[in-house]
Length: 540
Image 1 (tube, rainbow, N blue to C red):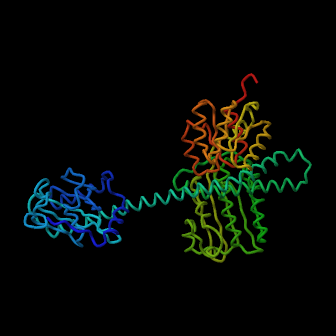
Image 2 (spheres, one colour; image 1 turned 45 degrees about the horizontal axis):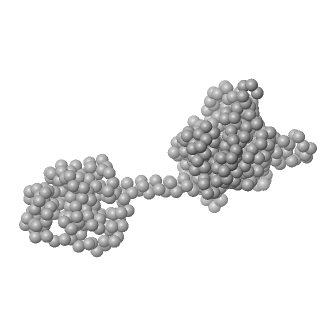
């Protein structure tokens, strides 16, 4: 018996094999189908997909054999991986390399072997697709060709499997990045939006210049717009994964448009572009819409229009109602878009025409299209190079008659202000925001800066409710909550986090947290949660 030596490219060959991550994995139908097809075409009782590592040959798929692997020293496939074409032994008893091989002299009594090398895309033979018989045999030319084709199909499936794994890993890295970005950006936004909202709520009680109210309103709205942009980048992934949810409510459409106009006009004024807004008489006072998503759609379209419109010219936005559909038209006197570029306009990371030299991620219109389609609408572009552009958005209306009434009831504070509340938050600015919010609700709270501190306080004092930040130094929010629940299983804990990207994961957990609130914290949603978990008693 002759033992096959290592290949000349042994180290690189083994790396190529390990990169496929197939060794010792479960059987997979696609590989079994190819093995069975090879057995039928070559008319052999045994067929294997054999992967040769440093010490053994392991069978990813097999027909007619019970063994999972054999030593590399006795493996026919260890010889086959040295060949560029099919390695065929017509009668093993007449071949001095194999006549005394234990696989020949005992089960499975190999008398015929033919194996086509499985060559990775970077040129390394990692194993074989082989056919085996217990009597002498010889492949026909058609069988040889078929075996080679099937061998290439095996490699193609391995490559596909590897690519899917790499894409999954890349997606996990992207998710981790978006999660970190969400947390890092939303944390300071929590302070900006939180304090500006509190100042707006309290401004009527103080004698301040009228401009102050206007300035604070702009800060509040711009903070929310920045938050919306952050959310949109994160939400692009949710749109593609089908995880984005539509959240509609009945709003005063003219107030909504006025807020948008005030913010967008600032950008237009900076560029000396006239910004005109027209609302058709057929638009009712209130509409049931997802205002956050529609705000993002309009903002993306208007910012693009202003960016590519020269000073002294105009950008117009028109709102109308047509057969219960909200129609939004954004027109400009900008550079226009060629017919070729229009076909690429809504692609991710695409910047077309003059925009190629402009700042931007190229995600705006891709997100816009995703949001429009999510809302069940359509978007059309009418443009000629050098003659401006018109974007027409059609969004169907949804019927939610009780939205306004329900919203009013939920926003009314109806909780027990004497309840003992613990807030676990490590960020000092966020602590100040929470203290200010609860002060505006005439409710005192206790603050803990770490999970360890929270555990000590809970063991010393009674609490009716805990608001727990998820990202804490040392013991994180989940671990802290689990420890508290072990001793106080009935104590409600509300999760707080600036990581909006992974919110759906927390919603599935109903054992540790009773609610998940995302920072920047909306006062209305906080009140709703307080009403639920520390309600006033009927006799109060």
